[in-house]
Length: 177
Length: 267
Image (cartoon, each protein chain N blue to C red):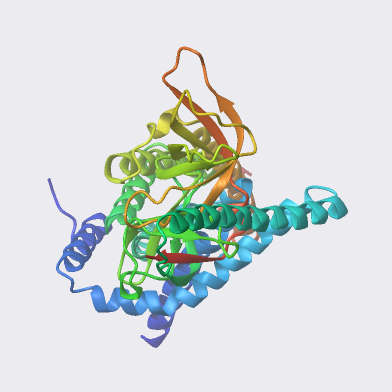
């Protein structure tokens, strides 16, 4: 019982620190570095290596902190992150049937695209800053390319790290003797 | 359709709806306020580290000696720009006061210093979140300046203990501005951010004479932003003969990425 509570507390603390780190530290870095989105990377990691329940809990904590610090309406980041994770879960269940590096890479890139499009379109619809439509801004596409590059690098690193600790992701062959 | 008992989608949807309504009804307010109060110092420190890294990254990109000299000179130019603008304002004000033979006390402004906590990403240039809000007397439309007194932006939204600033370089961050030059005719116009990098000033009548190097300051039109805060210097003027208005590109004297502390001016 206490072990379970301890696990939950550590999980909440880690996700909170990660989210605050993203919002306060990473976004203050130069353009190329601030495209690194730790929230998305670890969200896909939780979904791919654990399950939808863990990923949804991650979204709940991370989305809550994001909404608390943000000036969009409350629930904006929760909705965007939940839609993203559910879309990713659908892709993972229906299209990506194995747990390979290629699946992880494809999933993380798809999630990056879905998240940015949702965020951009909903920001345009609901936020006060109604300039040029986000999809017509060159800075949006440049930022997206940087973010995909970071996500792909992180995917390779995290998959290699996870493979070093578990045999679940190593290919296996049945040999006939 | 069969609903599974422990379906995470269903459970978390219910939790999000509950959180949303609890927030709307104000039930979450004590929790939100306590959490914000708890993380404010942590967030400001993290932002400070990020901004410091940003500054050192930008510095290391060029020759270090030259860079340090350029930085020192840029700072000096910024200070001199502010001083020059203040002098011009004062001289003009003095003249008017002498004209009417009546001296009135110049109202002092109340400043609220604030630390930057976070940055909003989607907008070009980024909007900054500061750790002061409604409880500190802030409201929408107030001017935000740097330590040197350079106009950084204005407050666009306020919560109880935090506020959102749009930077002068962010699109749709409009300010009433004027040109300070030798002609002393205080040409008026509107500034707006341009791709998060520079500022453009529009609605300048064709007959007005403006040139690169002229200083742009706030015009003081409206209640919230005082007159004479430096926005930047003109780097380029576009005045096509068939256009009704002229446009100018303005470069701010500061790199906003390195900001960690700002000051909000309450008139």
